[in-house]
Image 1 (cartoon, helix red, strand yellow):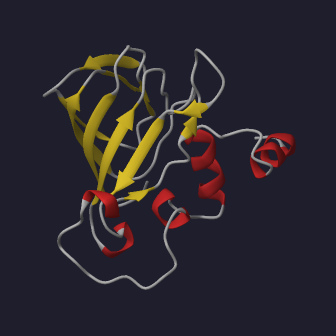
Image 2: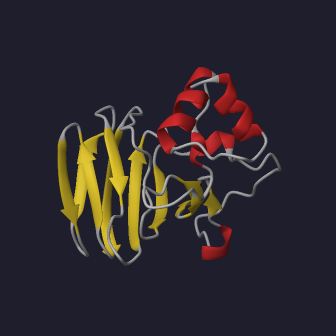
Length: 164
């Protein structure tokens, strides 16, 4: 990642892909969850209302059809730093992509497609998943999610240990 690109990100003129942001945070080191964490005190609860889920994506990610746009939502259940599992509600708008580069992180991840379709690449194999389809893989294997379809895709996923 060049100094020029980092400067453009700082100025809000560019948005990094998931893989690029992951490389930046790995150098710190810091997880997505920690980066987007609220520094205020939190009350431990076992119920997390929809409006309380924490957004941990930048929202603006690479759209291979156009310039960056608000295409991706990754909403986390609770404070992942306090648990051994990280749960996400993911929404990929048409054209949303985690970036042209495959990315990795420690642990395992699994998810179920609730609505729409998603193309999932793990290493060099790409599969299209639809409603009810699920995935489970070691997330240290390079992977990428891409919605190259016409409808949004909703996924409920988990990662253990929390590393995203």
